[in-house]
Length: 221
Image 1 (cartoon, one colour):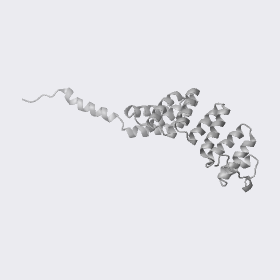
Image 2: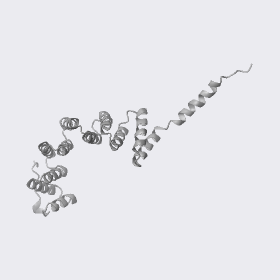
Image 3: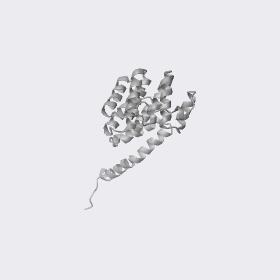
Image 4: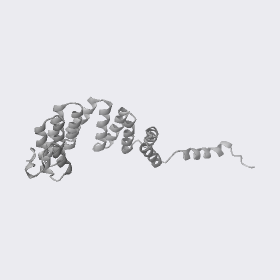
C-alpha cells in the first residue's frame, strides 16, 4: 500500500526554508545600518540597528552606533538609555562616557549629566574626567565649577601635558581673563614650544613666541 504523506508535511519545510531565507545575517544587518547612517537615511538605520540589537542585545559597540543615530534624529533621551547600557557593559570605555554626557546635555537633563560627570571624577579621578566635568560646567554657565575642575585636572597632570594648560588658556580667554590666559599660554609653550596650535594661540593673543615667553606650569613639582 502506498503511504500517503499529508500536504502540510510537504509544505512545512518549504515554509521554514522561506522564513530563514528572509532573515538577513547579522553582519549584513549591521552593514546595512551603517550604510543607511552614512547615506543620511537615519530612519532605516534606526530600524536596522533595532533588528540587530533584538537579535544580539549584548553588542555594546552597536548600541553606541545606534545611539549616535538616535541623537541625529532628535532622540537624545533614547540615546542616553542605549549608552547607559553600553557603559554598564564596558564601564571604562571613554567613547561611551563622552557620548552619554553629550546625550544628557542635548536632552537638557542637567541633573543626570552632572551626576554622571561627578561620579566619573570620584570613581576614576583622571585628568580626562576633570576636563570633561569642566567642559560641561562651562557649557552650563557654571563658571566657578568649570575653573575648579580644569585646575584640578592640571594639578593631577602636574604640568606634564599640554591639554590641561591649553584648555585653561582657552577658557580664561572666553571669560576675558587675559592675565591668566597668557600665564597658561606660557606654560603650554614651555611644554610644547614647537606645537603649531600653541604658537598660533600665542600670536592670536598678541604675544610673541620665543624662549623668553616660556614659563613652567604652576603645577610642576
